[in-house]
Image (cartoon, rainbow, N blue to C red; front, side):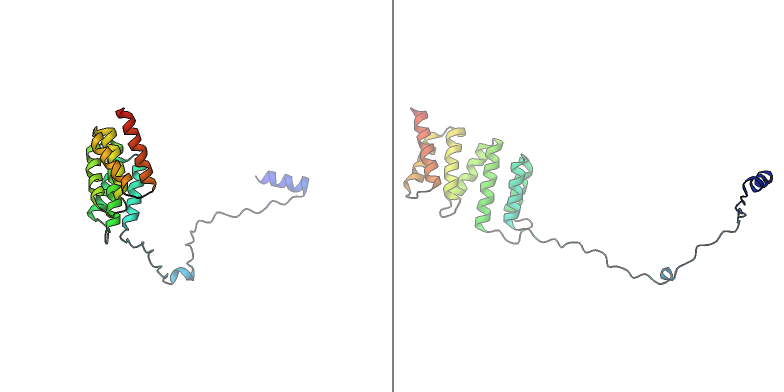
Length: 184
């Protein structure tokens, strides 16, 4: 190594860089003043408070499950609404909406008897917004799936004869015409 360095000096005029001797002492890391002070504790992040959901929110969630084809989960969700689980209060309108949704889910699953039972309950509540719609749907279930065209025809005639001209009355007329066409 010394020979090489002397050759470099004589031929090129280059001085070798001094190499530091290895230091065998280990230096401890210096502590900064900021670490010696006690660090201020940040408050733990607060979790959002769980508030009771409203019945319409829970019904919307059940409706989403139904649309996704998760019938069992949707039925359980609607039943929990009807039981009042997690709710502060359940109005009659919300109760009827939940029952109608439950009847719709049972109909889509092919449980026509359960759907008809729930629809009969809703149809019997006079003055409820879902009452007329439940009668129409009950007539459809009875005519198409339960084979009771006479009872279905009677319900449809009631919906067209009550003097209310709305979409339900119009649909009832179409269903009544379809029943007459099938009967010949």
